[in-house]
Length: 468
Image (tube, rainbow, N blue to C red; front, side, top):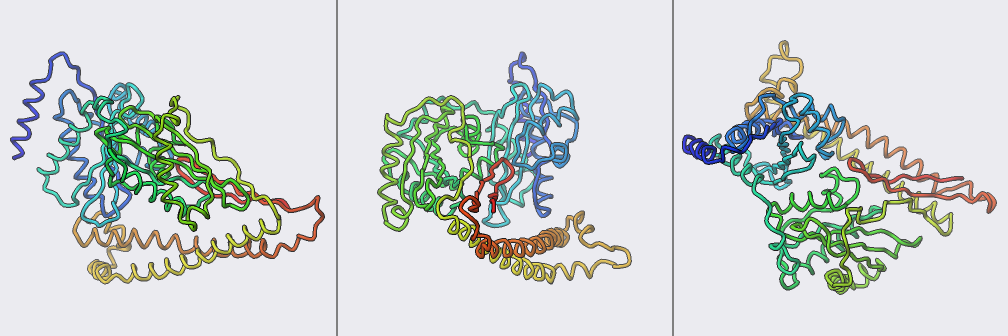
């Protein structure tokens, strides 16, 4: 079977026009965040390089580039922009200055260990842009010949030219509704609104429901974007629909008043084939009416009707679709504001306490794993002082299991003290705000509190500041 595949590639190469000039291609090591998946990543790297070396008009680089080195050099994580890592590849292999770089990221899908997600990104140094992307499921255990066939198919799909825009009109296309991004962290409310919006979109004539359920915040972070804009959403659209056929609906929800009941929902309709947004609308609602009053389903239908009408068409100039996130101030009774902030901090402390206890129990459970204990006993203690270090290079099933236990135990061992610190600080600060002994001050010295959301490509949080 392998001979047949090689012959097929040779035939394709011979059939290629003689005038076509080969492009240099670098394929860094496939990257994974889990030690248990390191062997699969090695297999995928070998298969991609084998297929890349035989792909038409590709000249594979002979310089090995470990993905981990690129991350360290850029001082960033996998979710960051690819341009820095691409430049690092060029510094190691100057012949790639005008070439292509194929990045591979192996992820777990959360539904089991047998199947993993592989994200492929083809970066073009000539244009400084993403030339193609692909997300596929891969089996953890696959014969080498089958793995090579899969890799050849993935590269073929990456190199396929995009379909013309006409194949993805709004009235006949798969619809992907991304979960709304909540500015103030009201994730449960945003998720409820998003699910209802998704269900109503699936029931509209001419629209095909997609089984993809991801959030806007996750996809923006994964593609290294500061804010959703035309370039960012084009990359996201192609990663979710490699054939470029489909529609994205995404948006942002934020509070509009001190009572935190009035919200604004900004929604955008993005045509993946056209590579731009075509419609945008904003809706002012009361959260209590939507969630408690039972109006959500009716409102969702109205939103979609308005979003797809001619009145909401706009010209996508490439600017961010939403205004930059600014400070969210808690107005009204200053005592009430302090009590809200104090209650939130106490709640955070309780949650951190539960997490600390759970992590401690989890650490004891992981450390007492009987299979790991048997593996540890199998080593000569006088010769091997660190079983985890030995397991990291042991590719046997027992060694891979032990390496996974060591990895999990290391994470939990780090998290436990962090959770305890958060518990103490949150409880102390929350109690102080609830007590607010300084509230006897004059009106000119009235305390104020401000909550500042902080969002970026590699971080998300909420800052609390005040004057007393």
